[in-house]
Length: 178
Ligand SMILES: [Fe+2]
Image (cartoon, rainbow, N blue to C red; front, top):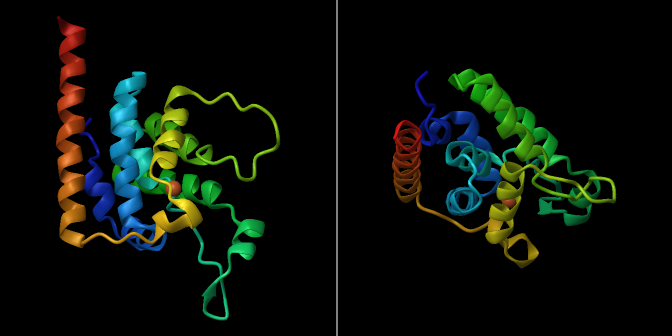
């Protein structure tokens, strides 16, 4: 089965539409953090970078009279649920393995605590890596959602990350053979 690349995912119109809403720069930075953290925790880099890239695609625009309404957002937001479903649909459509699509969707679903019931949630390593990667790029007041990045540079960074992921995957395969 051919790997679905980050580049394919990134360039898909669905991804473009929703990442422009929640911040392309934040999504890419989170994917790079996820790469680093995945290596640190022995997590699959392919799954971690995909989940991180897509973790915020479930955001809705909460505007009141043309202005961003943070209170409305806090009260009504379900972006992790929406994002998990959206990412899952997109990945399946692009030909991702159904089991991988599920793991990625679950990591997106659990990347934030904001509306989960009180109590300790035991996250799987992949889910923890995506949460930590998101937090590593967070800025006070949600500023990370508004950081800008040039389209060409964004694509270059994604292509570079694909190369890094594929190299890792190849090395892991070799490790298994030797
Ligand atoms: Fe985020």
